Image 1 (cartoon, rainbow, N blue to C red):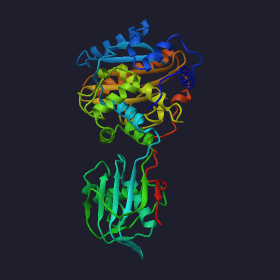
Image 2 (tube, one colour):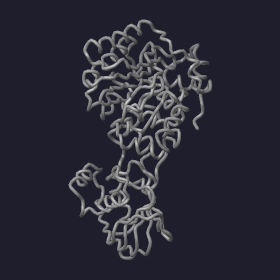
Image 3 (cartoon, one colour):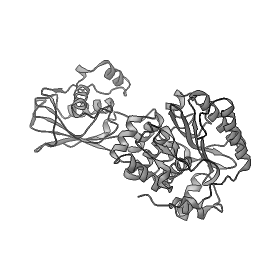
Image 4 (cartoon, rainbow, N blue to C red):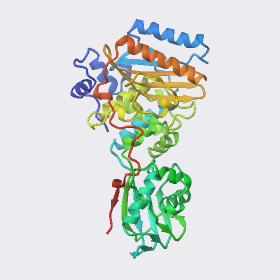
Length: 435
């Protein structure tokens, strides 16, 4: 488990955020992060900000963009709450749910965790022919794509295997491209490792891989079958997935629902994700209600306070890892994904997570300011008018940045991982075990 705040840790965290002095709320903050959030009052401490938010909501109402009085807003400066509008009420939050999935995954596995897929053989290898079966033991890798399979095919061929006389046997939890039926996944792998059978789609993906990537040609003579286990096998390759933090980055930048739901399943289900996230964020479990890990469905409900607390908890948990929260979520002006697809005009350097359902437009994140340091926020608007509501959200954020002063982002929110360059298909993640 990640350690809760201590005075030394909070000093380090504030230093990362560019803050030199700890304010009078420190003791309350420590207790809040230890799981007693009621000790920090949700009362609004900035009356001018309150008036501006009231005007923001009234403006949405005048333009006919709101469908119900269930708008939720939570804003805090560093760790001091500034504004709360229904901030402790669980409301549909769309893909902000992926923040809970991210936090639970980090809490369970850690940012450097890699899922392993073990490749084994039965029989002997002679003159490029494996006279036996090729065994794939899945390790619940949620992000095994065509690129990974092509690189694996090259590793198999590097061991001197060009042909398999037996079957391709799938054991355990193995999937490719979000397809987890063992036979279908096995057929995808069979195609991936034999370039002579590639579809146009696979060839297109290969053409985007680094120049010089090999085109494997490993022919499976038998069938694709699924078994619970295989005895008397010889391990030949251990394939390691991208580190978890890279997987979470692409999940959040692209808002990949299938990936989020697979991670939640691997974590034990949505209820366990919610419980882990609430515990780590120090908020009551009643403020995080989930039915899946992606946010699809209005039954996924999170309070704006809990969303913000989860973001702060992620930053807190990463502080000794070398990574920062911006390595998990899209950063305006740096990553593409939903920010570009939705034509967002979010302040440059802000780290955010978007969320959209039929009548939910959600946005949460953090941005740096001169007067208030790091400002963490969550905004959830119930509206079927996506584009118009997004424009108003972006205008409001720009207004806050202008009010408190634009400044250079501190290293606490400067990313190292780019969501468009993750390193899929890197051959170095295939460890050769034989001979």
